[in-house]
Image (tube, rainbow, N blue to C red; front, side):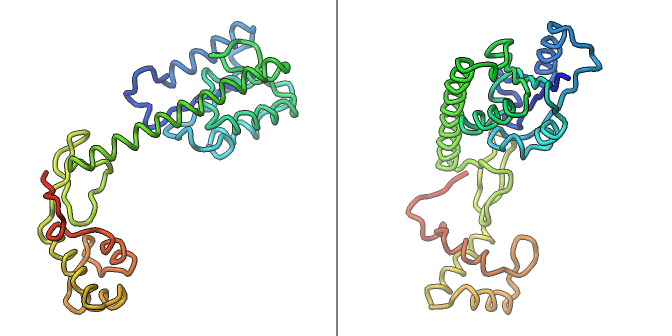
Length: 241
């Protein structure tokens, strides 16, 4: 049996060079045809919206593939980073496949199993390390980009933090101060300065019928998070949308 594996994450959507599910399936079935396998002998496992940071055996279809494979089967993926999250993960899984008598083919490396011999495994390990390095660089760029957007008053998450409203859509979304919620944050900070602990602040807000965004009572963990945030009225910087 030839067991194909493909994966796309939410970050892949619209990213230049990202292999679509159709492209990945085409490569896998092309490999099967080259090997003379019948269509009935090919099963493809597809994980949709799963990040590459999730271990292969913890992905829904990744774990299903592991349960399905038997000695003599060939596992095929079009790219190394579609299957593995790190060099350690890649080499661990390669050893598992080798012990179980499973061939592992990554078509971006070649059409020969990467678990076939010592030199192939060495090459596989080198490429796995490179993929891990590249993924770390991408993560670094994403973090830097999000920080830069926040510094400009942009929104890098779907839900705006308490004290702000979301203005605009998609990449153009920005944060705009919510006057009422900013007053509540200032009130909470003033109560803390008076010596009240989060538990007491909760009771005071409840007595004064001050509700949170969901029209419910504030909880201690919410108060603690808001105390970690500087109210706009006390901030040295002017936050504008």
